[in-house]
Length: 303
Length: 292
Image (cartoon, each protein chain N blue to C red):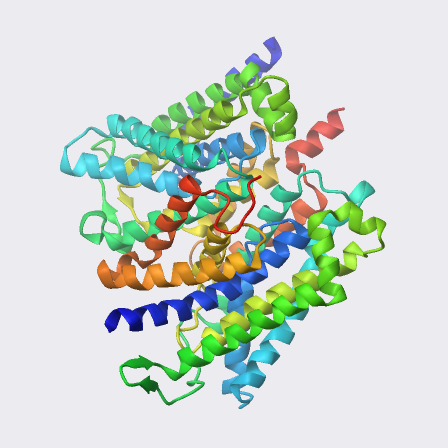
């Protein structure tokens, strides 16, 4: 445990001094995007990898968080750092609603409802273009007046470190054990006296909260939010990060997020379509032949 | 009178949704998975029929059959290459079949969409009308394309029902959906039946895409709404019930058409979602499903 803590502290210190070492604004922007994806990938893994619930609504929730926080800061002058929290809480509430409706039923219905929910969020954002700007996007007030990416880097780092620490504590506690047992076998978990409905709902709400925070961070960092962040391709990327890194691990999705973000930053523009084709092939091959992902292979080696 | 016409239009749409739901029901029964790439097979069917009509100069009914055959073989390959570990034993066994199937079919759906954008181009296409004359009885008007779509879909639904209820193959599939191990004991070859069932159900989806092609425009993203609707009507009708998906399709089609008339076309796709939520809250087992 002591060694692990030391490692984490070293990593955090390293991340803090990165902007001093790397001056290129392009890399700092990529790192900021990476924080957004890390938040999404880890929180999606919390419901998918730890609890075994399959949700397609994750990027839609990020979209809700982003739009709620943006609209609040535009119309009501709510400061962005407060907007991030309100965005997260709105998403937690949406997660609660979805969970209450379909967590009692079979897994099939959760997939269906979250997926329909994602489509509906996209439809509403496009249809209510008077307020949301539709596909053209919405210009959003940023966190700081200064356009320097470095300040945002520290905001992103702070949020990500809090989230990773929280998830680490959560998954290594008794609650993490409950969640894992639900994923392994829900009926057995129920017999062992775990209130499966309660804990499934709990992990769904926590995960939705972080998705909302991530979306709001994205909106206030780039100063622009549009419908592409709730698209199906984004969900594919999140899935790719978790599958490549390792389903049901904490550091796997972080590694996956680093990998996918860097690759997709290098193939922007007309090449992006080939990138998505390659990503989808990688997902299928990983699922077919290396289900554990990078972390799974590493753990096997260590043992 | 306008309401009667709308109900007829809605029922027509509903029958096409039902065709979509039928394919999904077969896959859910035999392989026990949710297939997220079904909408992309629908899209592939529509494009194959389009090219057979426009370049091959074939009549539409041959083109629909051709699309079904082509997509059947694509589905065959997909099942063999990607989904076959689902029913293997021993080393290749998948511990979490649902999760495996969801992730792979989702990735497959992205794959097909992107490849379709590259090959077919991102612009909308429209095949020539299947039946150019519009039919009108004293006050009811219905377009020739819609009539063709309704009649062909009814025909396919009828054939599928007969096939599943009366033939040996259909009996095998029902046996697998009731109890895979029991089916194995009495000598049903699950590998072979899964291949055929997957090919069959994606062929049905492609038929739906091919016959709806002149009504809606073709685009690489055309598959997502029919897929959602296919699953919504399964939830309305009850999981695994063919009658259920037929009735569910008609209920959804009529609700959508009337809802679009009363509210706004922009929110057309929301209506299905609202219907779904109402059913999940008040009657989660669907109209014809059994309580689990």
